Amino acid sequence: MDEKIKELKLRLMITYGISKRNPQLRNRLKKEIARLKTKERKLIIESKRRKTEMAYKEVNPDFWTYEKEGDFIEGILIKKQEKVGENESMLYTIENADGMKNVWGSAILDQRMTLVHVGDQIKITYKGIGEQKKKGKNPPKIFKVEVDKEIQTTDSTAEPIQT
Image (cartoon, rainbow, N blue to C red; front, top):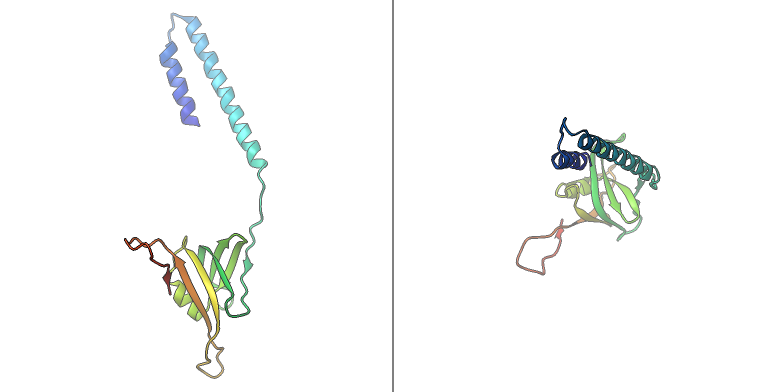
């Protein structure tokens, strides 16, 4: 906006010229510049007014909960955080039509999410509980992670990458 005002001022100077010999032209130029400054102030005030009239939405992501095999979440991966909480777990933030959801990592999910980048469209599907390998340890939670990426290929039947 400032650049346009400066450009207009410059054009006015070129068009009308700044001449000490011609006070009428000088006064006309000063009035035009004053008018532009007033217009600029009005635009700034109007933009601030519009900003205060914006509808704000609280950003407080819920946590995605899965209960049965086949539960899934899909959306855009917004953020990956490491060493979060008392267990120093991974925390993934996904945005979809329902808003933002946080997803706690697990050994298998974290391993599969290493190939996913912030900004990717993803789908995480809970596949159930795996077999308990060691006594005293919780059985692993199994997840399927799919990434929707445009694969540059001549084959139009290319499918999303699955991990």
